[in-house]
Image (spheres, rainbow, N blue to C red):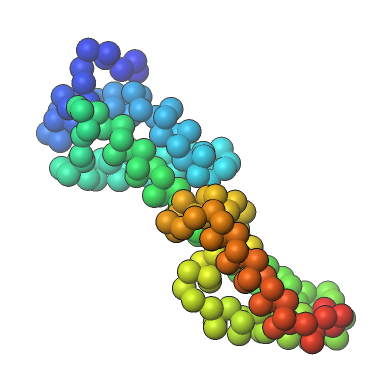
Length: 186
């Protein structure tokens, strides 16, 4: 399906709002590439970007009634939606990585003393994290567990790159101090 270059997004959205699936298909064909690259920039993998794109267009279909056009284009709305859905996807992936680490850190294959030591370290890290501010806990998820750069975390949290760098440095120092007496156990 090749998008009609003459029709603008306003006409396509209007037709789609009245139930015209072909018009929505044209809107999809017109904007899928930039939405994909926006998603890819946030999540960093082709498979995850494809999931995000799918979700963006499902949301667009469901929210046709309030889809906001800028200069007769749906692309800005789609790009912002892709960025937000991508961030949510990345957050979920970060939580899954932590949960997977948490479940496998004290492997049943390890000797009992290593299992106990690993459990002690993880418990101490959890206690240390519980004493942090919401922003610092979020930074831990994004920059320590996750793979966001300081610049990406700054963009997401609305802080400066230098501020993020300093906070993460202090956070890592705190975690080292809080687990220092357990070094060598795990």
